[in-house]
Length: 497
Image 1 (cartoon, rainbow, N blue to C red):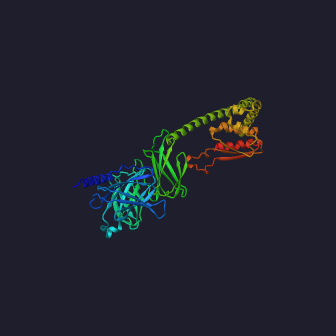
Image 2 (image 1 turned 135 degrees about the vertical axis):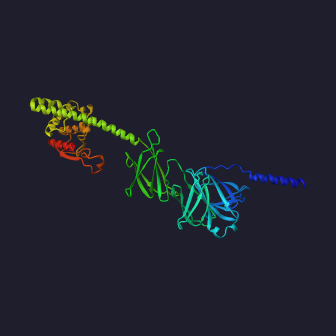
Image 3 (image 1 turned 90 degrees about the horizontal axis):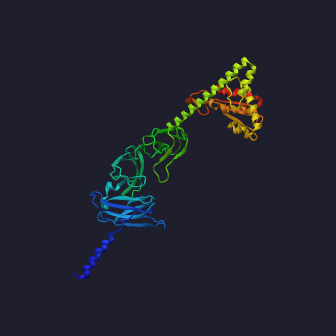
């Protein structure tokens, strides 16, 4: 053998090795990394057969872009391709072998296993089947290594096909072409609708988002969506035992869930509806439309809610109730003492009664509002006279002495013409109610009539019997300055019920 021939052989071998020594490929924001594995569908041995991918060109109509993949003797090959497109996979001698859809996410990596047999072997019943590769993926579009039992029910024939994913979250199964299937997993019936409408492909790859997480036991389906309520207390810790509600705005149906040990409460709700979301102490805090979005086959919505727990809020309410009860008791004690003193003095000595009445009219003393209307009227008128003198000496007396009702009425006396004064007459509000009556006696607002609405806690109804708009306990009055007795009578009626 001559030297030239030897050098030629060495050069050929060197160039051959160079052609296979490709630099490591990495996914980018705009290009996905595809790793192909081609194997014999019967013997499972690697197949050394190059691939070609095509996709419609974005630059010219009726043109396609080509991407070639060299497959080595181990049946493996890699390729970078633009994201956000659908590709047809062609094997040598078998056009349109499979279809592949690549989303528009950045840094995607996909491993695609292609079972292969020579075209002449695909005859008879096999020609009507498609080899389906199922791949479970996580929320980031990466392969999810879950071993799951999967059932696929042919919607037309109701025949059920079964398979199980391997420890890479992947499964292969042969299915009839041109059919639609309902895909179910354990605990997730009718989870996904799979369409095998394109009959020209011999194999089809389908990625399905599916995850199992602690505390999340419900899954969406083709007809229902999932609302995940995640409750965190004020320290940011997940909290169990918190109630969430979803009201269907169309039917009025209210669904409820309670958060578990992971702070998660789940509701399965029919699609194509709008829901009002509530907690026990925050009704209708948001509105949630439950509709499938374009290119999305599942509806899963996380609602992260941070607030004081129900127990904390109930404790605060209880504290306020106790403080209010103490104030009520003290107000009742003072009013009762004043009333008894006035009663006794009137019987013993009219002059002493008049003298004591002057003491009660002190602007800082409590008026016995539950006494005889005539007595209350006299005390109010006396208070008003004293208050008028104080205002004359100091126009800002009401503000300076921290009387919020009187100071507001005085400030707005020129601008409030047509008015309705709505007053809470429960016991804890007694000091402010007295200011309302004193203001009426002062006749400071320039208009003919004053209208009042007095309301109590619902005419002694228990809480469970109280309904919005039907609770009762609201009493109305209207009158001029000289109708003070009428106003007092309406207020007392509301107090007594």
